[in-house]
Image 1 (cartoon, one colour):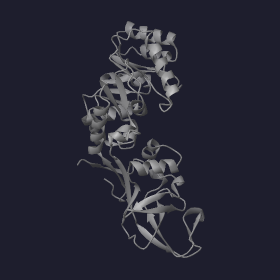
Image 2 (tube, one colour):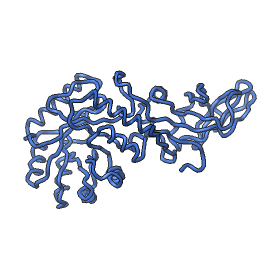
Image 3 (tube, one colour):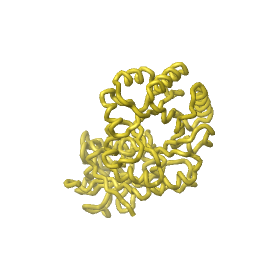
Image 4 (cartoon, one colour):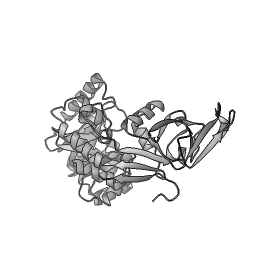
Length: 357
């Protein structure tokens, strides 16, 4: 409960569920739809938004860390969960106890895992096909890792790679070809899930015949080039006007006085700042009050920011900091970043309210 300020994210869980249903209905030739709910569901947070992903039809979840996996497992017992990032060796027993699937991202990591003498049941293998972040990069290491797993009666439930530029057809083709070439060097007949395409890959290209799983990420929250899906916004950020200051010509606003009034002006103070993820670079972009655009001025403070308004704005008026898909994309462009970062930056002290209807 937010007791000290009327600042919150509105998460529309109904729209998340509807979006996932539309995606699965449109791209219906996969067997496994892995909902990627890492980073608090791209900033949406809460078990409510995870449940919305499952209700939409995802039959597997993926997270980045063990903490994220355990947070979900404490509330939802039956959905399989894959950790995309490596788990510290000393915590792998928690994965076994809680039916959380780990990723084998290198031969060295696998050898250390085996040394722990933990009764692992299943894993996914990550292959590096050009991202050069995590994953086994060559065929010899893949064969060795695969044989070690078989020897130790550990099921290779899945194997996957990650596309680093799904907008480039040549790079995509090269990665998929490399992925297929590596798979051809091992016996994949008992591997249940082979997955590569994430949100952009699903939309941009036909499903390769040898792949039966996909990872749904930001597309679940309405961000996609395929407008035929008619996906809906799921994330909005609101605050309110807590004070209105009347400035005369020459008076300045906030730290360092970077904004100077050019005449008689009204400045609204809004209780959200860079500690909440609205970084100082937001100065100059627009928010909405009473469905009208107003500009952020002056340096954004840790806990507050300033908006140049007019006589129509009153104390306690709602301020829409992030309005919808289009506005988040606009803000991302202004900040020279991507919508992922805009939503993930919104901090945990900002309350999440969940809309179910």
